[in-house]
Every structure is written in C-alpha cells, then in structure tokens.
Image 1 (cartoon, helix red, strand yellow):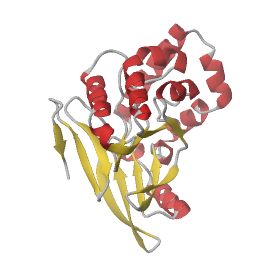
Image 2: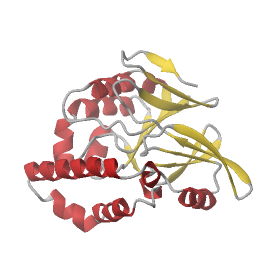
Image 3: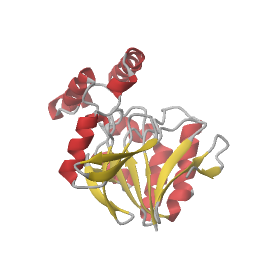
Image 4: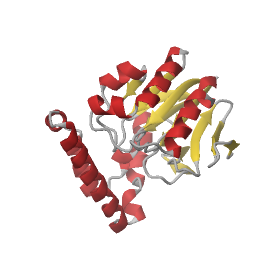
Amino acid sequence: MTALLLSDLHLPAEPSPLREGFLRFLDGPARTARQVYILGDLFEYWIGDDAGLALYRDEIRALRALTDAGVRIGFMHGNRDFLVGTGFARASGVELLADPIRVDLDGEATLLSHGDAWCSDDRAYQRWRRFSRNPLAQSLFLRLPTSLRARIAGDVRRRSDDDKDRKTVEIMDVHPSAIAEAFRACGCRRIIHGHTHRPATHRLQIGGREVERIVLADWTPQRMEWLEAGDGLRRVGFDGNLTIRGTC
C-alpha cells in the first residue's frame, strides 16, 4: 500500500477544473493508498470552518468517504488555509498535522512541511506569518462577519500576488541554511515540502551526509500532480483531460 503526497492545489471557491481534478483524485488514485498527506494550501483561502464547510461541501464529503473507507488523511496548514480548524477535521475525518512532522515514508524517515517557514529571506512574509498564526489575532478575525472576512482575505491575496511580482525568485525560495538546520534537527535524509511552486528533487551534501529535498508541484488545470511513495518515489498526476500519467 502506498502513501500519496500533494500540496498547493489552491482550490477556488467557485467551480473549476482544479476542484474536479481533486474530486477525481479522491475517488480514484487515493482509494488505493494507505495514507494521503496534504501539505498545505489545499484551498485558495479559508476564512473559518463556518464558511469553508459550506463553500467546499463536495470536497468535505469526498474526504469523509475516503477516511470512512479506511484511508488515513493528514492535513497540514499552508499560508492560504491556516485557519482550517477542528470543525473541518471532524466533518472530513482528516487528521490535522503539525508543521513540520517526521514520518516513515517507504521505509525512510522523512520530514514533511508546507515549507513557507523556511523562506527566511522573505522577512516581510515571515512577519505576516508570525502575526497570522497568533491565536489572539485568529480569534479576533474569526469573530468578524463572514462578508468582512472574505473581503479581508481577498485584499490579502491581492497584496500577496502583487508582492510576488516585486520579489526575486531567490527571496521567495527556501533558504539553504534553513534547510540545512532542518536536516540536522530531524536527523532525516529526506525532506518533502511544497509552497514554492518549483517542483524538483534536490540532492545535497549536509554534515557529511547525502540527503534529498523533494518539492511538490502546485496544481494547474494542465498539471495536477502528486508524489507516490511505495517501492520508491515517483511523480504521478492528471493532465488537462484528467488522464492519469506518470512523470518518473
């Protein structure tokens, strides 16, 4: 039995090929897995369980059907859906994961993370991350009317998109020293993360050891990809016509 890992689907609130693809993933490939790890930014934004459970009713039902069938699903917060809470977990049957978390993957100790905490050169984002993860700030935000929360989330998203146009790729990528420290702290030889939208496999030498850092792909209508762990690792996904393909 395999484990499947994916991140950065950024499912919008409105109908889209991405939502269709995720539902097909849950009803197809995920059914053959032992474990599914969703490493953040499943949703384009999440302004609270009260609103999100209604907006993503079909996805919640599909997740629940999968967990009821015995597939374990772990969900990690991303920078867009960090307000996913226990209401979502109860409704869907998923387990909320710490970030980072060490797991056994295909017989190899592996550190999983969304990855945004390692983008330490992006100081403006790290300040926002600390503020947005503050329990008091979250509590106050969740008390606001749904319409106001949606407006604020839209403004934040637009500012984030504008910032990306001004920042260099290097600033928005993970920092080598942060990755090196993560490898030293976990004692693993493998890290898997998302966030950067730069899918690749990096083989490194850290502390005299050969290690690898695997970056998951973000989803687009033309590429809906996950990592399959079982008898090795390989990238698998749907193309734009929702036809399954391998990308070893």
